[in-house]
Length: 638
Image (cartoon, rainbow, N blue to C red; front, side):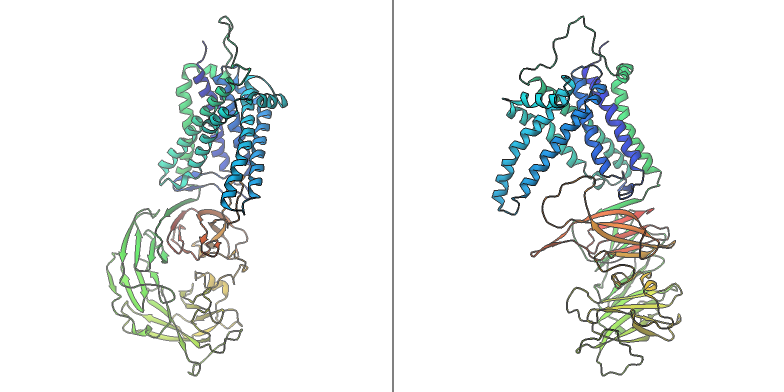
């Protein structure tokens, strides 16, 4: 019994495209050097991809289209015939790619000219390029229906287009090129459009089903175009007594079950993807985007709670680990560097320091303080906050003082300070509660320099942290002196306080730059520890709970596989999480996070490589955000 053409075409497409989709999933799990690793983004599996996949996929696509043309035309064994025609079809693909490449190169020669001239050049190049592309596309049906190979197939396609180029061009534009371009645009980055694993599986299923529909449409258009070639007919009228064309063995065996089994086969890759995600073995990245920028001050992830995001006048509690839903709490203080910051208690309480005032919101989000400024900070020009292991509030202040004022143990950086520079005095302040009515103030010492930012490229940074032994450590980056000073105490009660340039001579008990870096001091150290000052220094770094370092770096966001770049603007960057054994991070495992568009200004366009904020919880999960809060990224199992 003859098999209907459409059923045979569906079977042919399923036999080619479903195994390819399965191979993409399984092959995407294999780690390859120089290729982004497999990961789960917003609940959707993202396989590793590279040049090999970009080269193989067009060949598989062309094989499926060619075989579908044969199935619709009821030729004998379309899969086998299409496979034998692959060398000729591959040559047509290379010729088409070369045509597009030459057209883009010629267009690039006039890009610096006026916009009107560029459009005229594009129109002049599009006509001959389209004429060649139509001829190369006709090689596919000619190779399988007429049995021509090599030069004979190309010669037949060029001869057949004569007198019908316009009609064939319009048909190919809307029936072959447009569906492929729309498919590529719609499914370029589907992980950015989903929000949970179920939608991710459905997106993968929709992509496979859409690919089958697009290939079937392209095959039908090519078949119709071949029918109207001058001097050709689709197939000669078949004698009723002649036996029906032989189908491929899988098609013959399935019979009437072709359609239901074909539809079920389409579900296989999506089911495999769902199993990969449910196994929870891959790094999982959740990206929350916002269109409204707002200055971010700090992020934290206390044990037993969700991430906490702190802005200038508010903070938000993430009600789930992916930070999809949040609850905002407004503050009565305004935080901005270098006059304040935020700290987090072990129970999830938030301490906000801004405008010389301190406010605390406990775990139940009952806030107190913040109405009146702290007298102990009234003369400071920079302040920072952290909590001791016992829950005591630790404040650091930096105050400019006149050189004539006496100060014990005064130290000077290796580079001489400007003649008009003042001294900066660093203090450590211990507060028993948020009101800080009875503070204990310890002067760490003085350094040469000023807190005034003359150039604007390196603003003042002041950070206070507690090291592994419980000792307070204060780090100050002074823009005028161009260096970093560190203050420390010999004991938990801050006995024998000292301050010194971090790059100066070593003193007893002085923290090393590597030890300071492990205290998560942000960009205070810049590229001084473990990195060269070549723009590759991390945007943020934190100490891993189980040892090692996590950092976020920016690198050019090159498209996956093969690509053609037109223009001279800067590449967009992408933020990449690196899992490192130490701060030098010579051997790292990288997990791509999110693309960062370049900064557009009146004068130039430049990459957006600003400082990020990071935090980790006790289970090894990470939350990070850019300084404007446009991307809040949560990573599980990095």
